[in-house]
Image 1 (cartoon, rainbow, N blue to C red):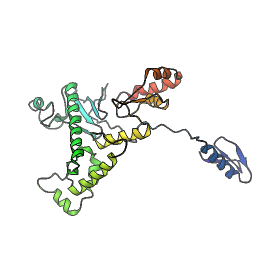
Image 2 (tube, rainbow, N blue to C red):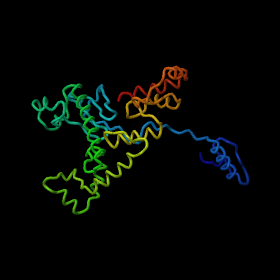
Image 3 (cartoon, one colour):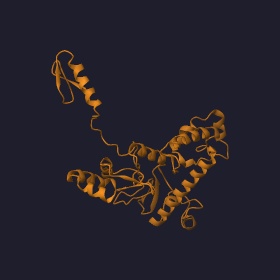
Image 4 (cartoon, rainbow, N blue to C red):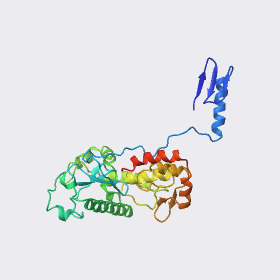
Length: 296
């Protein structure tokens, strides 16, 4: 809180004592320092999530949409044609069934053309959920193999975002750029072993953080979210994506406790009774906000 000038020769820190005359500004500053040294802090706005937007594709229908969140990053909803789609929020891309091991592949390849947008559309919610589960397990398996092999050329392409991959491609030298144009390579995704090693070593170093050790994540973004909430709150959001305003209030009341078996967050019955004793206004405002936040 800055010291402000009041009148001609008077200064004041916040709404505290007003000092006038000789050394007035210095005295006001010293008072502010003394107050801050007691542990006082100016009210801060709570940062509910990291500074990242929630990107929703325009293909999703806008009238009374229903969203299902799977594993904190796979968003399932209907498109404008009434078909179900799986949107990967970490990669900002749709998941398609055009993989030989996808649960819907054998059924859908005989019914639809393997072109966009058909490869992204599922007939039922059950098919979309089954594909999301398969996709998540596939990502976990690939990341596990990469971690165990300790060979960065095995790093899954989808573990990092497209933008991070592009940044690494911009560091290719002239010879590597010529190698990328080889007929058997896709220049849009090719990354030489030299840069794969640089990227892999940097990511492994970050994954060695105390909050992340011994854990496997489907993507670099998911690991970043986990680290953010681990450092800031010490617990993870139940939906693995964000804390709702009500959950933030519970956190600051010290009522949210980690469950060691499932690494989820639970509120005990005794603490829940204590929570009910919070003022009516303090409950109604977060509840009003949650009614909008929980639509995702």
